[in-house]
Amino acid sequence: MPHDGNDHDEGSALPDIELRVRTLESLLVEKGYVDPEALDVLIETYEDNVGPRNGAKVVARAWVDPDYRALLFENAGEALAQFGFGGRQGEHMMALENTPETHNMVVCTLCSCYPWPVLGLPPVWYKSPPYRAKAVIDPRGVLQDFGVTLPENTGIKVWDSTSEMRFLVIPMRPDGTEGWDEARLAALVTRDSMIGTGLPLKPNEVSP
Image (cartoon, rainbow, N blue to C red; front, side, top):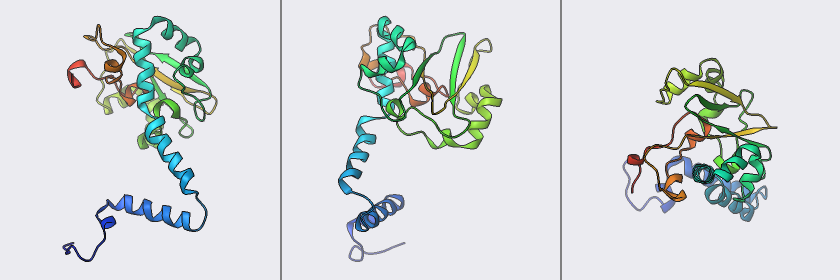
């Protein structure tokens, strides 16, 4: 609604959802339910220390280092620990290898088990009942919903994530990336490609 610049403070220019979050945070702090320093640490953790960029580093290393790749599929926890990735929601991990013959896709049919240390918090769609149901019944249809069409001769294997085991899909390295270093390769790795609902970017889809 129209208004002049004298009847609102700077905070009112924030998006509605951010205003709600700030208001809720202020109330929780005021009532002593939340320690603001602990909250800052939590926010920093999920902004800077966990997320898909971590998984992308793992995938890029697996693409260029055969020894690391072998370790990743043999003992994912040990391989991830080399990057310092582990802890809550990542205690038991298994890496899944995509090949021309087999495409892996991950779902949690019971809730939303997800490898936080390497992928961050799960996207909303991952937790939704339609995805959880259709991924098991019609995985090829789910991939088409995400804009991915695989060759008919490529089989799709669906893995059900649980609190005892979480999965990280290692997508196939895109063609045309010979000689690329890990940093450039990591830029091609998408979150969805590590869940199995997407593919890595192509070289011409990222900035040089």
